Image (cartoon, rainbow, N blue to C red; front, side, top):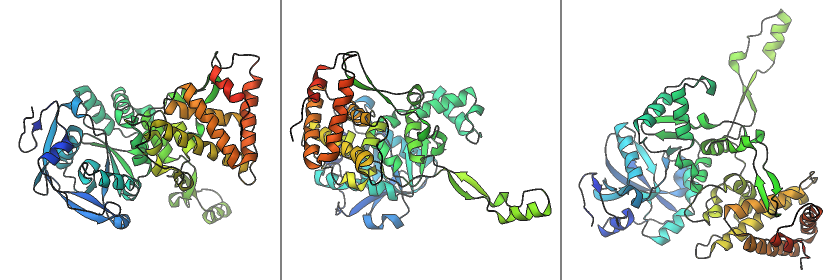
Length: 457
């Protein structure tokens, strides 16, 4: 049985669901054109009374607002739902969101905020479908995305996070104290970073700040080893011939936060003017005069606007968690290149093999275009393994069994060969030659053997 409470107190029920309760108790949303408009929550500093305002999505680039990135959390695991006031009506939210709202009030934070659990009518399936398609624009145009990691649950966690917030190391991790390292590890391995949808929300943002309780951190704190410095995973065969991806230890040692933030920061060297260094050269008059004429530069990193390709995203983030495995493709649509996104047709009414087939085919087409058909490109040594490595990435991301995944791979290769025969004939030949030349030294995996046979086009 549900026990309702007033003014933000908890509502305990084994069967309670915030969305159903908002409908049951008659919360009324102002109608919007979900394909062209979005609601934003108005937060008044120091207050737990909220209101909602409607904006045209086309006006978001000129609107000052933040977007919240967070984990909804399970009602069954938390066992509690909390009541807030939105536009004079009672509205029910889950614990993690409630803790953010109370923290924002205590810290006198205010302004416009997009938070999906409140701003989207979760009981209106048509509105949800339309709004999900616009999430990339909502997060991309936000002035700032707030990554909410919740509040530390133990005193030890709280103390370590607070100690980290006081660190003044200028990015030099070696200066961390033992307690600051504990705080850094707590934030870096927080469950927040394990979710598929978090990647899009963080990567699309103009600016990201990480909130943990009342402590705020800049995202660059977690931008560690540059992506280009990480060795690429190696394709290997097990004793029974099953292909699999083996990552280097340095890659596996990266925390979930570092993996995502480093990808966002795109650690690329870019020169910028350094006026503070101008006129600091000491020497002869000629040397100092020449130095004044030379532009002085420093090096900075920047957030590259170049979109990702499906095969890159699945390789890097395919192991993250999501409730619906189809989101291993659909959850990345906001960050991939337009040319690849246009080929994806999301359909949650179809089973996982539908999304797997799309991810496999589009990724292989990207690899084909990158390595074989791009103007002026040359096939790199060992590139014949790239295709098979990607197959392993997709198979493992979607948790497909070998028999079914290889049957679909065979169908995809045949379809690609029909559509563009020259490059795909090369791909087919490379796969067969790679497996065949290893055939003397190991027993080929039974289902993989089927792939070696001729492909009819």
